[in-house]
Amino acid sequence: MQKPKKNLDDMLRAAKLRPTRQRVELAELLFSKGDRHVSAENLYEEARKAGVAVSLATIYNTLHQFTDNGLLRAISVDSTKTYFDTNTDNHHHFFIEGSNKVIDMPSGFARVENLPEPPKGMEISRVDVVVRVRENAKRS
Amino acid sequence: MQKPKKNLDDMLRAAKLRPTRQRVELAELLFSKGDRHVSAENLYEEARKAGVAVSLATIYNTLHQFTDNGLLRAISVDSTKTYFDTNTDNHHHFFIEGSNKVIDMPSGFARVENLPEPPKGMEISRVDVVVRVRENAKRS
DNA sequence: ATTTGTGCAAATCGTTTGCATCTGA
DNA sequence: TCAGATGCAAACGATTTGCACAAAT
Image 1 (cartoon, rainbow over the protein chains, first blue to last red):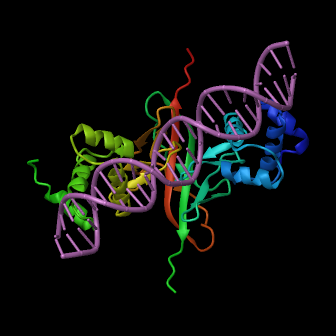
Image 2 (image 1 turned 60 degrees about the vertical axis):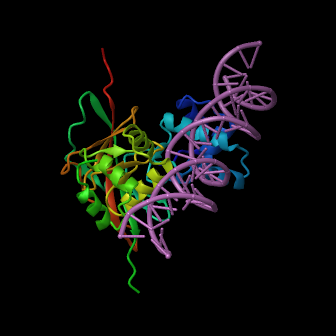
Image 3 (image 1 turned 90 degrees about the vertical axis):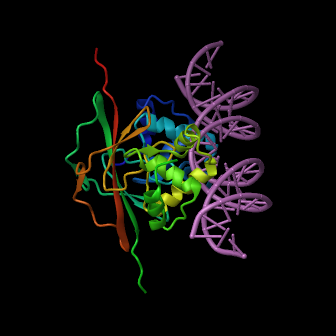
């Protein structure tokens, strides 16, 4: 289910964030088009194209605030960039080596079985599965 | 150094790398103490303390060469740093949030079931599982 | 009016690169 | 010898930060 635009303000308020112009506009970009994976640079470009005036610093701030407040999820694959996932449900990812792309795996797939006990005094906060894929070896 | 390094030399040769002084000494640091996870900065420090003369650039080069040749494995958890694992077998990791530590999970644990088909034209190169853990919420 | 957020540029941090100099086979 | 390695410093790219200004409540 999609987060309707009417409720962007509420969504932000619920996340204890003031619905400022930038945050609302970025939220709209992020949450009105289905699940996505964006990098800061990405979103910055997109905002520019959409005529949304925001600085890169604010993009970073906003992405982190959204993440800290559960609106986004940061995913770390092996590129040097951080990607943010608008889908905060439990699901995993494909990572395309070479093009450094991240693709959602349909949820329900890649269940992890037989987890060991976490170290003493620790609790599991999250389990991430990244399936690295590469182009099939070509034998033309 | 008294202990013959013949085995290290051979390991490097087998990996198609010239057994230079730096590479042999770094290999010794890396592979003579059981499984470890090091960052470039880490290893640099350790080398310095051990009186091994290497530049940071060479550390990076060496880590990557070792990785490219199957002696090491790069792991990416969500910190901004890259860690290298001396255990190249199939196994997964705990990541301690807060202290950014990486811990090996005994191999055989964390089997991933029900993997979806990779995208068309792609083949799976590796499956990584990272179990993020944090200190238990204290309820005292 | 206060508090909180934003923009900009400079600063940081991990990592990479260019290039002159060495070194192992 | 001489291709391949190394060291250094400068270059880099992503991200963060300091601080004056602007906007939300």
